[in-house]
Length: 510
Image (cartoon, rainbow, N blue to C red; front, side, top):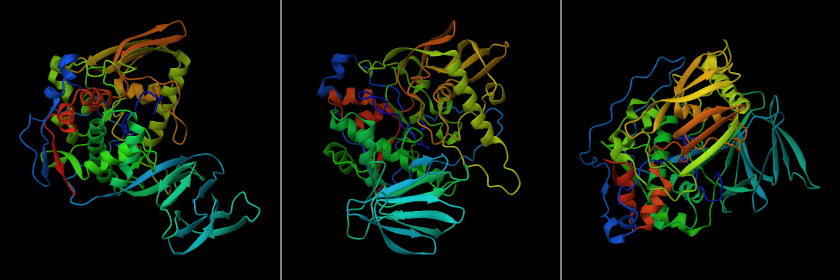
């Protein structure tokens, strides 16, 4: 959560997302177009539930949004169709940490003082917790009772992932970095370096969701906003799981690349919202909608294919509210902390982040050397297909920034930079925001980040770049502050979702 009063955005894509998701990750858009007094009239905001049994197709809806042709790219991701509505609850693989430092040590524990060690070809055996785990050339070095006088270290010959699970009959959580994660934690070596590790948790979708709602929304918000968020987050997770299955060793990231997740939660409100909407998904033309969302749309929605993805299967009416033109401009989130904002960065700071982002993308785009494993697919694999990466990788100063294109609702979707040599570099506005906010894999995201690509002003003044804009997040799909405003006015989750994902239907999948 960016700060105590602002909820997070999905796989920001995702996004986070986060994709991941999507991310993935992150995730906002439009809002009710009635004046404030009417928006807070409960009798005017209520709507009947629109829940059908899967696989009943969605009702007739506006024609899908036109999808622009992708620009030539150095590396094109494989696009998958949106998944059909599932008939049973999926299990998700969620990456909770990416360790990219030399000599990483993973400390895991269990409230009962014991874990089980598992791995391909290994007999399951109990180990005393806390457990410290390090990668070695031959496999893993495991220290039982780490930090105690009875600590004991053993070397485990195992090429591949190692897993630590709660004992049978005990509370089914594993503690890492002070957080209780449901079930086992799997430690996976990756191709990002000789000691690069990912920590992955397998968790049923319904058990996963309360930890998403607890992080994505503010605790005091209305239960109907929580229910709308539960359905959107469930839909996003189903799409991410279907997209990444067989392509990488996790489906979502517990952060901005997909959607925020804090593991097990005790708060009643998110748990009740998940239970009340169990199995409910957003569907369009018989397939699940990747229900992107973000904190604050700033009154103007973005379209998925212009901001987050070149995937033609995402060019659908529920993700293209910005094509409605002036009618999509709303005031749903005008009481959000970042409805309007001003920000300033040093020119050097922005250029450094642009260079790192572009170089990371170029490394992913270059073919792997013969005999070496291919680079892992990026969590934002559908972004930056038309960004001038080679030029951005060497940028040293920005002399000007201007918006060159906006969607029909007026939200910027492309920007042009001019560098110190006079070159002009054009890219998607959302790619620019992600680049400015970039951190390498395994590193924390910068504290000082560009709030959104909904820019009203961008100018270079001496050694600084000044921005004025609206909103927080990418602006596609549900606006979380707008959802809360509608819920506070008496709208139920069904009405909220119909506003932000026009043409989508709610179906109960399991």
